[in-house]
Structure formats: structure tokens, C-alpha cells
Image 1 (cartoon, rainbow, N blue to C red):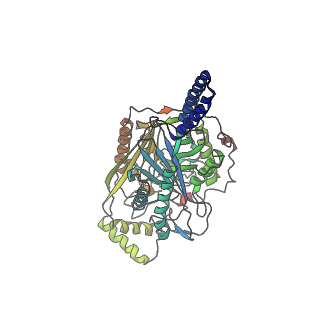
Image 2 (cartoon, one colour; image 1 turned 45 degrees about the vertical axis):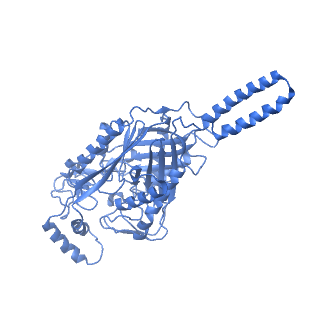
Image 3 (cartoon, rainbow, N blue to C red; image 1 turned 60 degrees about the vertical axis):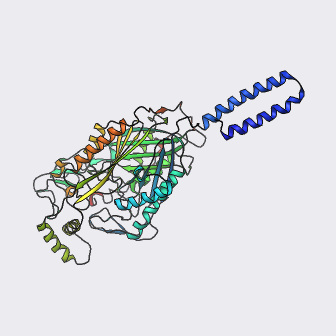
Length: 544
């Protein structure tokens, strides 16, 4: 079928041939006719290359970005044991969305600069986005970065919710998704993985008997593990787990080589930043924009997702303290991501599969005796917020007793060609993420934590046996002790199912390397220049 542009060219060329007919030279008319046919074939070839026909598989992608920096200060910030209020802005917060369309299926991945986002808020954002775009809510993956420097939209430990901000956030998320879908355009995709162990270390340690801290409302006794024990603590025996060092990248560019997006994944908890800040997650996005999107086009964004960082952060407690901040961490990870781009194999098209399943799990509820004692502590606090660990967990005990005894989780996986992505609404340990990667039917696979909800830490059963902060019963860690193996096995099976679906549809490699275009540049990892490091890490050891 001839498209409109091709039709207009056909009309103009035919008109020229008719005008020459009056010359009365038959051979000239034949020559012109031949020229017309050759010209039409050439035009047809050029148009088909630029605008694939309905019979050509076409992958499309688009991005949308919305600034979600609080308009009114001060704001409540969660992420620590006690509530903080912040009245200064260090850098801007955003929702960044990436829409994908393989011609059969569509999906959106959105990343929000927030610590924790409850499922109810995200469900409302998805509902609004579905109304605006027609995209089913099951085709939307929305995660929080886990920055500890953003307005609180989820009550956690000693922190309340910044209500006015939480009411605005669903609309902003939906707007970013709507923009991404509207901006869909022909694209090429690819992926790669490189390790970067410089800023990710297991933060939980097995301690000498009697030296690990505990609290009377944790649901645990005889704690043997401690989070953030301090550098070279003589009571720290060994790390309790292994961190995932991978920097995974999913890259998107236009058909002529113009960068459109880079979705990355790394498994460090956060770096720490003063004021309101997107932490290293936002700084990473800024650096990728600066070093890859050198033309500064507005239809580009990078996205950094939190991997399996439930027991990992930037602090290497085995060795003496080092100097770093959120900018230096971002520079290191961005350097690795840009180097990974050199290993990307580009595809003109790949099948897109997305699966969502719901899982219901029990929660760990306090005993009657624990609840009685907790109410005594909370009663003595009157109307003020908790100030100590005992008060924090006594209050958590009372709040949990008022909640349902089960919790429903949304689990998701995405397949893009041979790439697997899992989405889990929890803070996941490194060992869990590494086990999923090892057993996944899709290679490579990466895992996004705190996606589609905030259901707390999921320590593996052997970690529950050791106790310690991430196992202490609270709204931020309340799922049953068998939650981790149940979630892990479900994700592995979902990845296998995704690999089986549309298995006969093979990715289509890009025909040839696309040359660098004017205004673009190849990744310049060696030229990254981080800001001068601040002394130490601002507060990671004191926050969750």
C-alpha cells in the first residue's frame, strides 16, 4: 500500500511525464517513463527505510519527566528512625517514565525520587494514567528510588506523612506516564551489564555474643546481627551476606542513533545527601544526560532504579572509613554505565512481554503481652512522636495490631528480547537478587526493588534467625518469615513463563552500526568530573 508521502511524489512525477508528451517523440516518452519507474523505486526505498510499513516490525519508545520537588517547605522526610523536617533544596526531584511498545504489547516503567511509596498511592497514580492513556494498570511498573531526602508519603518508624505532598504525587506520576506514551517514536534497544563493586557492600554483620543491639518490641530475642556496626568494629565477626555489584543498563536510541533513554539498576541503598535531594539516583541521571545526550534534547531521560539493596550500602565496614558523597557515587556508577554502553548490541525490534501476579502473605503480628507493654510506652508519650528506639518500636507494635493480618503484593516481570526485569514491592537482600539472576531463564536479568508498593524488608529465613534491624517487626518489616523464598520462587517462575511466551519471535538486530550524528558524542566515561567529596557519609549509618 502506498503511503501519503509516496503518493504525493507519484503525482508530481506523473504530471511531469504528461507535460513532455506534446513533443511527439516516442522514444523520449519511453525514456521518461523509465526514469519515473526508477525514481519511484528509489523514493519507495528511502521512505521504507525511514518509515517502516505496517508489515515491518517496529519498536517504539518514549519518555516523560515531571518535576516533583516540593513547592512548600519545610516538609517531613522519612527514612530514619525518627522524623526530620527539611527546609532546603539541594537538587530537584522527578518522576521519570519510559514507555515501550513492540507493536503488540505496551508497557511503562516509571521511577520516582521518593523513599517509599505505598501501594494505595501508586494504584491511584496508575488509575489516572490508565484513564489518560488507555494502558492497562497491569502494564505499569512504578518504583521508588529510596532516596532518604524526599518528602514522606508513607508512614515509617518515627515519621508521619507529608499529607499535602502525598495528595499531589499521584497526579504527577500519571502526568509523566502520559507524556511518555505521547512521546513514543521508532527506536532501537539494547542492554549490557558491568560490575562496579566500589560503592556496594553488605552492611549486616554477625556479631560476638551479647554485642548486637536489640529492643523489647522487635519480635526477636538474642539478636546476633547488626546493621552498620562501625568501621573495623572488633565485635564484628563477618558479613552476613553478599552484595550484588552489577550495573545493568537498558539503552534506547532513535533509529538514526540519537539517545532517547538509559534505564539503569544498581544495588546500593543510597549514598546520603543534605536537604531535599534525589541522592545519587538523580545525580546519575544528570551525568548520563550530560555525557550521552550531548545535544541536550528534551526527549531524553535516564532512569536509575534501586536493585537488591536491603542489606547493602556504600559503607565498607571491614576497612577504615573512606571519603565519598552522593555525587562521587553517581560519578562512579555513571562511568560504569557509560562503559557498558560500549558493549550494547542494538536491536531494531524485540518482543515485549509483561506478567503481573498477586500474592497474599501473612504478617507477623504482636502477641497480647507485647501489645499490652507497648501501649504502656505509647501512653506515656501522650501526643508526641517517638524519640528513642524503644518508643519507635512500641508505637509500631500498636500500629501493626490495628492492621490486617495479611498483605497482598503485586509482583511483575518484563521480558525485552533476552533481557529479564523483575519488580518486587519490598526491600530485597543481595543474596535474593543474586539467586534470581542465577536461576532466571533470561540472561541477563536485573531486579527492581520497592516497585508497585512498599511492603518492607524480606530477609531470607536464615537472616531472620540472626535478628537485627532489618528483621525487627514494624510496618517496614512485617511480612511472614517465609516471605522471601515464596517471592523468590514466584519471580523465577514468572521469568520462566515470560521466556516461554512468544519464544518463536526472535529479536531483530540493527542492520549496521549507526554513525555518530552532529551534536551527539560517544560516551565519555573518562571525562566524568565529580564534585569535591564531602567528609564521610552524611548519615547513612543512622538511617534505615
